[in-house]
Structures are given as C-alpha cells and as structure tokens.
Image (cartoon, rainbow, N blue to C red; front, side, top):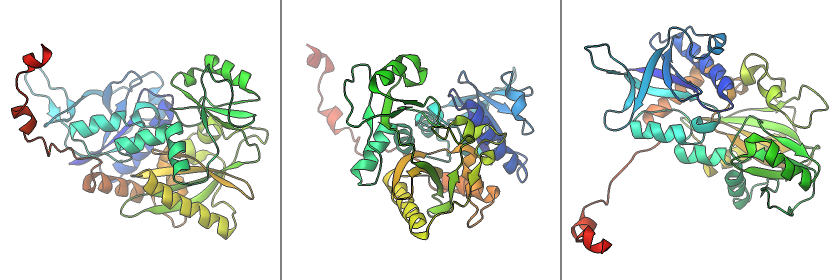
Length: 368
C-alpha cells in the first residue's frame, strides 16, 4: 500500500492548494516512488497527476500525462482508475491520503464526509472539526462560550439596522479562509453596501470591530502522537499601511506561506508566549483538532484574542516547526500514521436491532 496526496478543489484557495499538494507530493516521492498525486479540478473531477508535475503545468487546466480517477462509496469504496476495453476498473491501494485542500469543500467537511463514506483514511480534520473551523460565526461562538478571549462578532445581512459595537468594522465571509473577500469599512451603511458588491459574502458575512492596533500572531500544532506546538510566528505585512494581513502577504511569493515575510520565532515576553501556548492547547481540545492546524491570534502589548483556526493550513505550516525543529518528512509521517492508526470516523449501526420495524405495522395504514 502507498500514500496519496489530494489537492486542488472547487474553492478560491485552489491555487494555494496546488502549491501545498506539490510540496507534499515531492517530499514523499523522495522515499516512495509510488506515492499518488490526486488533483481535484475546479469543476470537481479527480485525476492522477505525474509526481514530477510543476505548478505551471496547471495554468491551462489538467496537466499533461494525467489520468482520470473516480471516487466510489461503500464497502469497496476508494479511488479507482478506469480499465481498458476488456479489463476491470482498478482500485488504488492507498493506506492513507494526505489532504492539502484549502478552503471550500476541501476544508469544510464535505470532502471529509465523502472519504469517510468511501472508507479512505485521510489526514487533517474530521467532518465536525472541519465544519467548525470553516464557520467563523460558529467558531467564534464556541470560543466565547468556553470563556476564551475573542473580539465580539455579529452576523450581517441586508436587514441589519444596528450592531452591538462601534465602527470601523472588518467584514469577513462566514465560510472561507486565507483573507479572501475581507473588507474594512467605516460604518454600517457601507457594510450593507458591500454585501451586494462582494461575492464572497453570498453565504453569509461576519462583522467584527476593526482594531488597527492589533497585529497577527500564529502558532501551529500537530496532534499525533500527542499535541506538539510549533514556534510562535509574527507574520509581517508587505506594506506598513496595509489594514490587514491579506492574501498577498500570506501567499504571493512562490511557495505559499513558506515565502511570506515573518518574525520567527516572534520576539515575545516569556509570559506572553506561554499564554499563547496555553490557549493553543485549550483550543486543540475545544475544537477536536486533528492533524496539523494553525491558530491565529490578534494581539498588542496588553491584549490577546483568539481569531480563527485554519484546519488545513498553507504549506501544512511546515515552516513553523523550527523550535524544536521538525523536518517536513517527519511532519508528513506523523500525519500519515495518525490517518491510519486513528481514523477520523467509524460508522456504527449499533441499536438498529429491528425492534421498531417489527412493531411498525403497515405503512399504508399510517398514510390513510
């Protein structure tokens, strides 16, 4: 059996997912020439790509040399390659699949649910963990209910007449990541106008107070075999006048998050660093983290707030594990072992013993 790496998908983060997937694919190919690269196209198809594929090969769609795959559910589920005229479709014998699917259905639980039904072991969040991490409103509500520090949030729609906090405001797609679609506005009237102009708000918009005095702080964690925390990072904005750490700051540099400007490890007082680590441990339990995740905070000299969790972070946050150092090969090895030894879900029909069916009587009589 071998390992697969699945990346791409119908999401705004499609291109970043390709970069992360190719990094993982190339690293695993150093020791496993049979590793399988599975590209999820923008239109939802799965294809197998050559291990030597480069990022530029995706500019015109599916890279040359790729072959069609299908995902089947059920007892003999998995990824299948079509057979020739007289043969039978061949099931890929995969021990586990490393997910490098950022945003959209690759990180909101949709893909995870399909893989659970297909019996495919995979890295990263469970269905529940993915759904919670992708929903900024639900995540913020859970953090608040747990008594952890976070900025107030509210849902915004065209009928909103008042907000429970003063402007300026930062608007975020309720379901999304990577700073895509985020707007900073001065007042509620402008915020409502942006609902119509910003396509990323079609499925909901979360509004928070915009705090220009706060900067970004990040830490990653691995959950196998036990929770391991990375060094703490302070990402740097490419422009001192930038309102937020945006998509370009994070990803436009050639290697995804790896090439973004940063202070690593961040220069923090010991007490502040320990507080961040403590919050990260608490959040790992709160959201049922699995695999590798990145937790984003907002902070200044006196305050620190939980911002969000990225359950499948760019470049799988490989660049953050520098203290203590952890190689990318070892990080991937942990993800694969967890996927195999700790399946994300196990379905059970315990309790469905037929008692209700035997006493149900005639369905036709119930409709009469």
